[in-house]
Length: 126
Image (tube, rainbow, N blue to C red; front, side, top):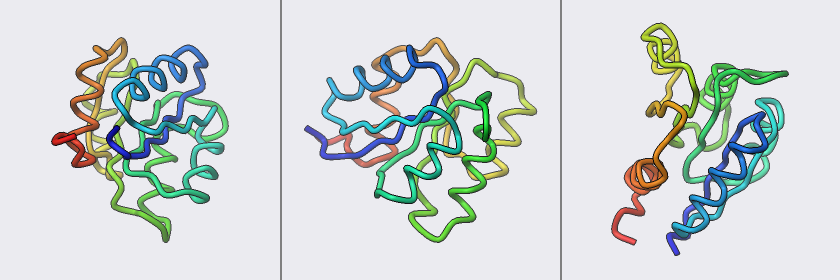
């Protein structure tokens, strides 16, 4: 058990379930949100050790999520990983410019996602 908490934001129920199951099995405590608005609201009500967000979502996209967290008043330095099908340099540069920590392209390897989250949350010794 890492004891680390992760917020996973994705409008795809399948991806939310896959991320949640993969990370839960690795000892993370995972909370999910159905879109960017839900994600930012959830983020404001709990403390998380990392956030995973998709880019293309209704209501508020991943860029908006990153921007809202980085400009907010709570836990602004939380690691934010983008998990998306997008892989263009323009998307990556925009996300980095807003403060994203890293980028993972779907489909992802389970061990890759777990390893990256252990690294950014400091749980790699767990």
